Image (cartoon, rainbow, N blue to C red; front, side, top):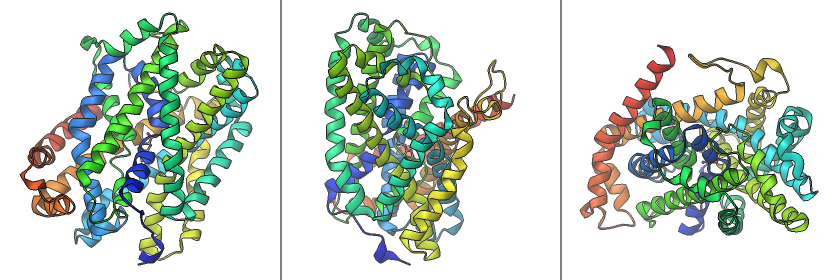
Length: 457
Ligand code: PHE
């Protein structure tokens, strides 16, 4: 029980910023736009927003409450609550986190590499994205740098590393994206993009759209894998969990929404609208957008953008690495420094096929062909889909069932009442109870079963 080496957040703002730092990352700025694009536009956005607020929010509250109540990692929390069988939630979470971090490192490496290219004025890189990612030695070097920086921050413990970085960088990123969004709206053709992004065509909703939007909501909010159980374990008793969760959700959804508006204005103003996207979308579109700012300003703004995006990714990778690390520290009594080295190395190794799956090797680049699909899917996309669209919502389903039926309302409410004395009389209390008991398990379970069936039959 190496609780002394776990650290804690210095105040509530520290927790909110760190948790928002975990939530806001590549999921908002890289993944969200291409998922919207692949999912057919505004209808996907509507589904995503509904999932975030209606289904994910109660799950988030439960995760934080379990974490704070137990002061444990994602697995230990369930042992402490004397429900050891349910630690399967935490174990599943550690597996999801490992898979997510394994490819996240690779994409974070791309953003870092792009920062360097754009600072040098290489705006043509947008057209050469395929060659860039196929060069696994070059992008691999960036992924290594990224993994090492993440490991060093996690080694330093919670409050000093994560908190300090989040406090400065998050607001800066927000200002930059907002400014870019305003600029993007002035571009010719932007209005078409705005329409595509905001006016839903519900006939476009297919099972895949729903499934993708749900996975995106979980991924973007860092939910369903115990990241917020782990972070919640560092939250003080006087903090109001509902308020904190509200801020985290609003910040995360807000940034994704603004980033989407910016991206679709740029995409349509470059005449690339409505073509789907895939993992290369922002990397193909943004260099041209920066170039249009002029050679000097384009380098400054573009370079800053990709550097800040790398930092946003860093605050997410830190939380992804923290989950398995906190588990290893608490459960095996290994010292933080050593635990980080072991865990980070394993995860990096798991990511090597993803690194090789973007053109470097034929085998990993066309790894499987989904049932009914006309094109093969890369190893990286397979890992990404499995972890975010299937494993995270499954984790979320289990957490809601656990919160409602195993841990029970009275304990959850007692935890939520700490730092929020009137909680049980609020409408929110009623909603959370209803959502955890019925809405989340039924809707999440239903989508899960349908999707699994659709993949195989
Ligand atoms: N939410 C992060 C992002 O949007 C990714 C993440 C998922 C982080 C799950 C932690 C846990 O980039």
